[in-house]
Image (cartoon, rainbow, N blue to C red; front, side, top):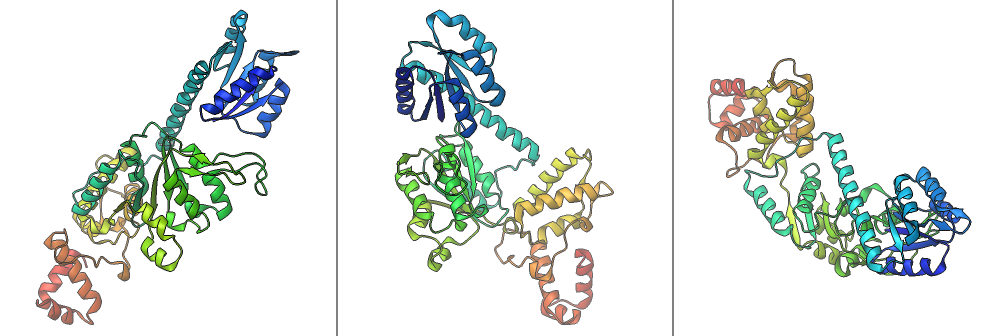
Length: 443
């Protein structure tokens, strides 16, 4: 945390700053209330200590000014034994707590501990509120598919450790959801879960976003900033789409992973980090290493626990369960609890390619729940498939039913054959049988 100490006694400022820095926080000082107010306008602080007797200034008035301009800033007041009544008055005006002079470093650490605990609770509340606002249906993190079940088992076994985890898979397969679940099952679950989207910023801004920067480090750096690594202290840092991480930043990330150390942009001081790293990408990192766009040593450092999330089209056992869960969620949201899929809709669900994976399925079911005119959702409310997008992954040994395998095979032959008679000949059935199968399958 960044802590501001406001006291007109130099010895108090110095001793308090030393104790705060020893506890692992950054300390800044001000010898008057007006200087403190100016500093608060220029920089962001997480906590302030305020002496109620600041020479000619009234500490209570300074407290009121601070709380008017920075209502969420916790302010702890210093008070002498004879001024406990003033401390009570300060609490009534919004002070977080009070500390009697003289105080020991242990008293100071206890106060800081309470502030940290409140910050974590507020962070959790904000996170929960964000999830509620998104109103996303909860996905059951279990699977009937053998590959997905094995992936989940590996993640859950690795969760309690500090090992870096690399999540591989197409867009929309739920990598960020799984990263949060790993955090929830980890030993750092009480800490924050912080996300950095690697493709979202330029190289310069991304480096500052990750590691923070000093005032004046580059154009626009008007104040000291703590980055996402510091924000994820004692928690989890999730690096989304790490395959897009610029080469210039990769050595610094490697240092963070290997040595748990980093430096802010424009600062020479080495800082220690206590954060768990989870990374995700939809790219083939081995191919990126071969092309020279991703460092080999960073790849192997991330590849300690590497889990590939199979695409939805290869998890047909899960697809129907997920579709029904989404439908139940949206039916409840829209007050249409009788909604269900028709048989033709279920068949279409099974054969669609789902290139957008779970994200596409969720959006499709939401749209169908909104537009369906009756309680039965027909195939007309599901997306049409382009010929190149048809499921072709179904092979002998795939975890699908014979009917599903037959449908995919007939659809593929019909696309390739020059005529229906030729398709029937390839399939080894007469044209009348093919006609009946096409009618039943609505092909």
